[in-house]
Length: 623
Image (cartoon, one colour):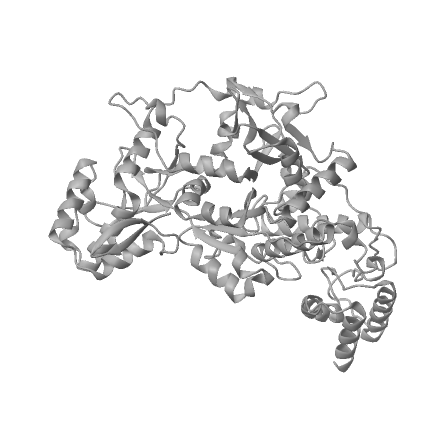
């Protein structure tokens, strides 16, 4: 894999997957070595050739370390490649309006969890679990996003959304992987490992690594966790000038989640997958709290179709929902953004009344290893243009960047940082779904939104996709797991609490979402409500915290103690395996508040319910 390393005072491009990240290595070298006059001349010549000589306008004001940092940025971005990318995206799009060319996904390529038979679903799941047991499945997480919109300065995967367990998105996903490995062993007798590849950005890499190390990798085998960093691209003015953010630093930003394909090749991730014997890769975004990581049913469906590339989708909540649509354009598969679809096309209906273009993209994809290898090769190059701006026929298949107009802080001619009020430049990005059009056998798997999609994007107070909506959707899902297993929820009078029906929650605001029963089941005990785990769930109808009218009610602790003891004793009598659920109500009397603080740790110890009950009661009695 190409890396820049320093040897004999020069940069050398070598195939060395164990070398340090080239960006940081270049910075380390130039920050410690004075710039030679010959090297300075080469930099000036390179920038002159590409119209970027302005990057050195403050050169005489910089000290040696700052000069080294500026040169490091210039070396890292590969000026020639960046300018070719900018030229490509600025060529007028000759393609016809995609709205006029849209076709829905053909029925032969489209599967649905709601319409598949029980036997089909069982067969898909079995095939997926068998592939996992053979060590052929990997998960790849796109985790470059910061929690800025959530009001925190760290990666979104580390955000605590307020579950009783305190588990974060990273934590939940790690435990789902562990559970899935257990399920594969239970079915086949052989436990396969699921390598977890995590693509971070410059800002999320170190915090992510430290977070996993601090938490003991959440029980994962260290060898199965691979963290790598996506590439960054410079920001441009509208006329193609690279923007300076400081006198000695370029304005750099991640190149989009589609930058994945370039770094799979350049960071030797494909090489690592090949050594492990990986054949199928599940790629998904970090922010979906309900994601079924390495979903064996999805993988088995794709295997049955012989797909080399596939997308998991949900039905659009409304015709105009702001979500991309998976469809065909000119016979090739694409995700067409909602802004590219006219209102008339968005409203089209089939004979049964369903939307014609209804496959909402949720950044949840399947790829074969061979397909990833092929498209990563395309990402490593750029289209070449002749003097008239036409593409070289041999390079037409190269992946292309997209333009994102942004408000980008910049350094003015006086060397002062200026923050614009309007978009003043562009960032170049690739999208992970850009490769769909290169698929020879594409498939789509439709799932239920309420079971598998609830993204975390905004802070509480926003209309949707907040910590509160994510938390409530997880509670609802786990509530259904318990009800489907035969459990019931009761109120303070012993009356059953009805399970609220699912609805198109994408159109609801946070204020309109009902207050659910607080119900969280550890992923270590249940991956997706599977039947064998359901038998382990404690007698939920006997172990439900009673709801109370308000926090000001005076409680009789002796009475509460007796009620709790009876509930635990009843549950213990029916329980023959480890405790597997946390079920608590929002408004808790003192005894339940204490349990809420201690319950998770006891559960994680793997002790049996009877032992946990004794610990809880004996400790509380002393209080």
